Each structure stands twice: as C-alpha cells, then as structure tokens.
Length: 342
Image (cartoon, rainbow, N blue to C red):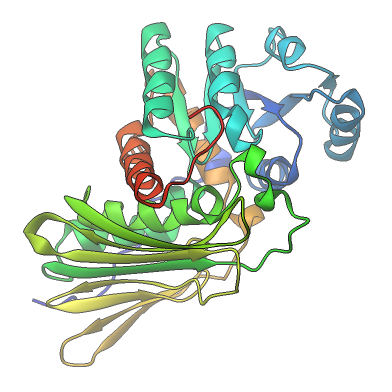
C-alpha cells in the first residue's frame, strides 16, 4: 500500500545530550562551521584547538572563545581535559590524526570521508575497537532529522521495492581552490562524491558491480565522474559528481509504489516529497539549512553513544562508511585515480 502519511523525525534534542569536552584538530573551513553549529545548537564544550600553525590555532580560539590553542597536534592530544577529538584536517591526514588521537586515549569523530580508502577506514576502526574508544565518521547528512524520516519510510517499505536511486553533487571550483591540489587528494570524489555513494548504498546496500567514467580537470586531476552501480536484484543507482560545473545536487529513491524526491542540495536540511503511483504528493517540510544547521547532530550522536558505553554510532555505523569507501575505491581503480599514501 502507498503511504498515507509521512512519519515524524525521532532525532533527540541536541540540547539534552550528555556534554563532552571537544578538541578540534585542524582549524579549517569545516571546523569553523562545526564549532559554530555546536555552540548554536548544543551544550557541547569545545575546550581546545590544535594546528601545525600556532597563529591559526590562536586565531580560531579567539574567534570561538576557546580556552586552549595549541601549535601542534601532539600538544592538543596531551590535554587531559579533552574527551574527544574532531578531526578536521585535510583528507590525507585523517588516518594519521585519527590514529594519534586514539593512541592518546581520545575518542574521535573524523570528518568525512573516514579515510582515503576502505583499508584506511578499517585501520581506524580496528584501532578504536582495540582501545575500547569511540570512532565515527562525521557524515552529517546521515544524522539529519529529515534522513531519520527517510529511513523510516525505507524501513517500512512505503516506496515498495526500490528499483532506482539517483544522486548528483556538482560544484564549480576555480583552480586556486585546494580541491584542485593532487597532494591533498583533490578532485570531486572525496569532497562531493562521498555524499552520492553514501546515499545510494544506504538506500540499496553495497553494489554487486559498478561501471564508472571520468573526465579530467587538468593533466593531474580528475574533474568529473559518473557511475552506474548494480545492487541486489539487479536494481541500479546512478551517481554523478563534478568540480567543473554547478549541478542540481538532487536525489531520488524510486520504488514500484512511490518515488521519494529530494531537491538540491539533497545532503543538507530541507524538504522532500513522496509521490505515489496514483499521483498523490506527500510533503516533508522543514527549513532549508546549511552546515551550521546540521553539523551538530553527529556530535550529539557521538556524545550519547559514548555516554551509553558504545564505541560506534548506531545511526551511521563504521560499516556504512567502509561500504562507501569501497565504492570509491572501485571507482578510483577503474579510472586510475591515485591518492597520496593510499
């Protein structure tokens, strides 16, 4: 039967989460948005920031009224007042920084992607398990209230058998942006394509096979990727990601009873619709938001999980992050994309 009403989000109030003392490793753009979100929407405490550049750490600490600014990651990890580290370094540093934090006895929430490859993700997961510490990927989309609603719809089978998933994420960047730097694992795949692969595998599971095509941005860097994934039952997902143009950044989950359509940007807070075979349209309405309106949900989930004695998220388990990385690994293998140290 097609859905009659849409469920409500079950996302807990972030203001009611147990409070952790956070250290930020890497004071870049996403770290600013993360701390802003925590301070606006939670009671979490950001008590320290670390950078290899002391001036950047000091500037970040002053901007967000953080007590301690460290000019090295080691000094940050030596701070006994830090419970958990948010790893917001460049992609190429996620693995060493996460492992260093775990070795120092800190829980870690690693900005997506968890690593450059599934092998790196497994290394982080194994290190956390061995030490009994929390490790999570800050795939913020997975923790948004609207995705809890979508998850309930999928779990209830309200769309019927899912035949097709579509996901697109493209943004135009100029060559002076760090996404054009091969030494930092640049190109669209990790920054943008992670969202599309995570969405498709969340809805349809890990693929059985995939076929990818690419387009270069220049002689050193991939600029655009499209892929068709075949999942169980020969159902398919189609993904596109690019740094060469602005695309609609929309997504859809298409079943034999109804179709769920998410306007762009699909990975951010905002509305979606479910359209049944007879043309009825059901709407989930919520304000369109940005990173500042959503990054805190992953931190809230980590705090609750740790307080309950858990070492990984039930909302976005490490297996989900590893499945996404396995898809990206296969795309890279087919297109000959190499990342430093992976």
